[in-house]
Amino acid sequence: MQVERQQATFSRRRPRSLCRERRGAPATAAARAALASTTAVLALGCALETGVPGATGGGGVGGSGAANVGVGSETASVAVDAASQPVVLAEAAGNPHAIAVDGTHVYWTHWDAGEIMKAPIAGGAPVVIAESCSTPGIAVGGTHVYWTCSAYSGVEDAVPMGVYSAPLDGGTPVLLSTGGLEDPVGLAVDATSVYVGDNYAIKKVPLEGGAAEELALGSGSRRVRVDGTHVYWTNADASSVRKVPLEGGESVALATGYFESHEVVVDATHVYWTTPGEGPGVGSVNKVPKEGGAPVALATGQPSPYYIALDDTHVYWVNTSAGEIRRVPIDGGEPAVVISGVSPNDLAVDGTSIYWTDASGLVMKLAK
Image 1 (cartoon, one colour):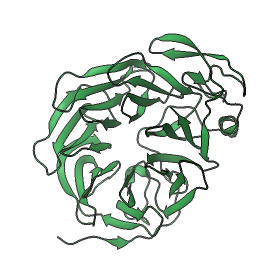
Image 2 (image 1 turned 180 degrees about the vertical axis):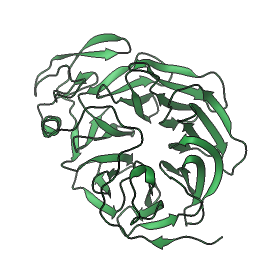
Image 3 (image 1 turned 120 degrees about the vertical axis):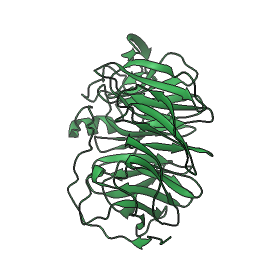
């Protein structure tokens, strides 16, 4: 196999929009200022006063208040804890988009500038890891960060389409593969390979570079996750959730009939995903056993649920048209608003915090 591993050069470009437009509120300077302000106090279930849809109330610094927030199809009044506030990890960051986190840093992509960035999760100056393309796909594994460049994310002829990597400490991007790729978008990484949602198929690229191997066909297969045995993905265009062995083989449908299913996460036993449904306020957050079985709806009646993240106890997601982040226990229970009055472009969690890129131009962190 001929290894396609080469240094890549980039030029600035004006990216096209994502194929699926977000339905959240537009970013404004006022929204950015309010989100960054220390007077925008929040806690589980409270709202930021940013003028963004979903901001329904809040408490001032050093005090407390009450916010009326939607939970499922009901409204609950909850107290605001002024001791819990969001932290701005990066400010005036253009339009930050895809996000990932490891034990020390948060990583993200700039949709406007085409940069791969990082900042310490404990606070500190943001750093440019690499100059690259506008991309909705980023993953961190070992000593490197990985991302995709494709027509889906607005790549022009000056930027070779493909899968890229760079050291976490920064450096010139390396083009791992172009061969066998048509429209790479989302990706996941393990110890040996990068697994790519190629929009039309699920493919695998060696970490050291080489041609992409097709594992399974899938219409709208733009997001992927992996465990020790399988790749999991949603076929957004075909309204299904599927898996295929890491080494290839027969793919299996785990759930079908979920309109425009897109984002997906996995834990040791289940696959979780969001689907917006065929109309406003009819979206859902769902799970299904990895070995197959009846899907379970963890939250219904959601306004355009999209980006999703997972920890040991809860599923987190973004309701894009409501401008909010919600969560629900993985074993089922009442969904709760984590924060509203925001406009997340992507979402990640670790053991202690929630992270998101916001259309206001901020990269944010909130203690759970």
